[in-house]
Image (cartoon, rainbow, N blue to C red; front, side, top):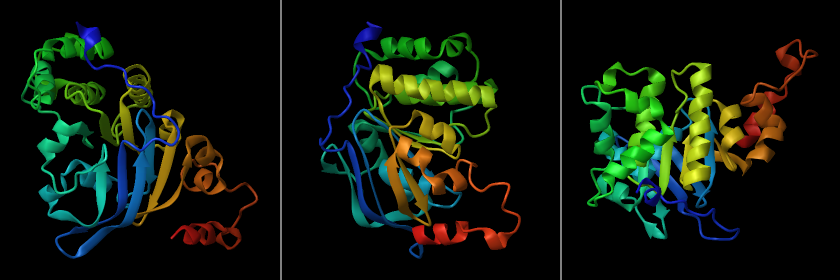
Length: 279
């Protein structure tokens, strides 16, 4: 039955070992370009953790380091370790990482346009060898009723529908951890809200742990339990989502709430000094 698939997993207790730990990693592209500079973060089981930062900070590279996709872009982890369920996984092939329970929803969706919705969903289960794929497809349709109606090629779906399909394809792998890279990119404001509601539903109802990379910091923190902020390839600030939402630097640099009407020239801005302190 569908209810037997994609089982709910409890949120980790305080003090428990994290599901994922990234410990002081460095990532180099083409043997010369240092992108991540001693980055560390933890993702507890059952939580949503947001990874925020400006363009070029290294957020997508972090996800690729976890999912084993650096090799596709001539990148490698040159120092540090990525640990999942207590075992080191850097250096393992991407398909084996999927089998261990990590699935990445890529930036830009990356669905297969000339395959049908159903074929894309079945593709998400390529690492599985069980008889419950059909019931899991039904579960995806319960989350995304619109996909059940779309029987043609996936390339004809709207941007929002393609994002739903990308998330549904990830669900088909029965992951313990989903890495989401910019799920709001290219979507209308209404569709963005719908996608984030689905992300929260995945976490609450199915117990799926999520590491979320997102430019829309306000929305990301609204669904996250914890957050990290990256600048220039390293973590400069972290804390609970509530704490980050009330932090003055975060409000100014990422939530658009800093400053005030009294600021009339750059001479009066202290933002640079505060931001320099991070780096």
